[in-house]
Image (cartoon, rainbow, N blue to C red; front, side):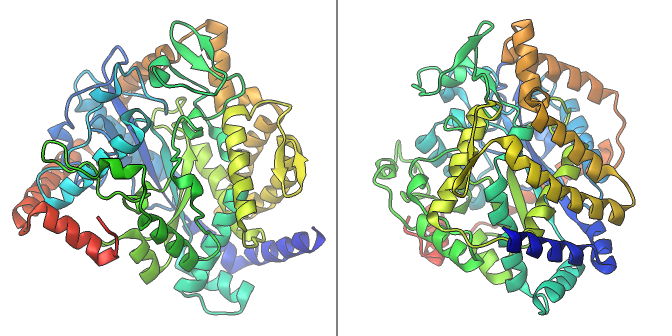
Length: 531
């Protein structure tokens, strides 16, 4: 422990050096926020993706995820969190003005859905790329059911500048920065994130309750209690979205995805994509002449891997994510453990940006040994414990060989993060980072101050259904957005983007020269994946 503490102090001192500290102003963020379109009564909107929003296939900022009803808003990388928040507000404003009487569901767990069969799978037009995206989703529906795929989240993208990496690698390793040692440093961050990931749902989990329609007809081992007319909750849950009810894949549980090095990560992911699944082979035959999945392997493609964090490299057209990582290394990381924050009209608050910068930079600076399978599974167990029982004062997590409470583990963790926050404050000549850290520290002492604690307390005190709260907030946000002015973009720009995206989709459809199944076979032949 002493040597680890000493190593952390040395690395922190390097971070605090003037040139390195200055480069921290160029940390970049992007956000991907998912939101279901709903009717005024809280039921799922079954209308197609509105043409006024443009093409879900080619639009830069507005697309769909699993369903026609599940919108996804994407912001470009920006160094100023205020800019990203403003961009998200502008996107929300335009969308809400162009979906008629529909609203955006402000929670992670789905609104009232009468039947999972009514959830419309996203359509992306008649191009081969568009058909492939839809077929992938048909495979997801067959494998996991549509209800799970209707869950919403917020993805937080984080990257450090080239200038930072040149200085950091030179000072910590005595080498010039290149794609290999930058990727290795990002993977060190990722391993520490996995070790500490339980903190994210504890602080920002916002799904302690759900609509009864979500679990209708499904047996659950979780000891749910009923609330209101048809809501169910767990007394100490933080993020049911991250529980076994949500983003899980039993076939993936036997995989050992290695986060020690970029090449071992790529190899283990490619192995998963090439491992036949006896369970999913049942969807190999066509139904009414239509394919039912991309292939019968454990993962159809890389994106099917459910993980609370991913190393990322922007891909070229039809390039596979593992090929992009192998060719150009890690460019940024994607944090995938955030619930939609229902207390924000855009699903995430500015304070979360500042805290996540501190947390992720701490994960980079702290020493990060390679993980074996047992250590990896310990991180999974800790995460699972917190998502269903995180606010339980009796809960103990496993930190190596020691069982500790969340307050005990957090004391040392927050002390280390406070030093990182101080460096970020100095770099940006502000106090936002330390203030954000202090605000989260209060939630460790008082679990009722967490997002999940606030939501559940409100529901229980008023005997409210989860859905009633969601409908009320959705209406409130729709009205407020109508009165909010644009700040980074304007209506005319969005209208033009929509028009151009539809034109781009039409051009892609006209350019196709091979039938879909030939296209699909060629795609998988290039990757060595059997379809």
